[in-house]
Image (cartoon, one colour):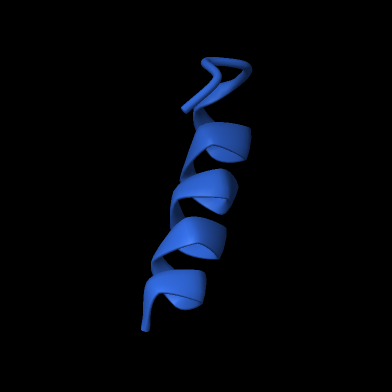
Length: 21
C-alpha cells in the first residue's frame, strides 16, 4: 500500500479488501 494520507490509505485498503472478496 502506498502511504499517502491516513484516509487515503484506508480507502485503498478497503478497495483491495473488496476486490479480494
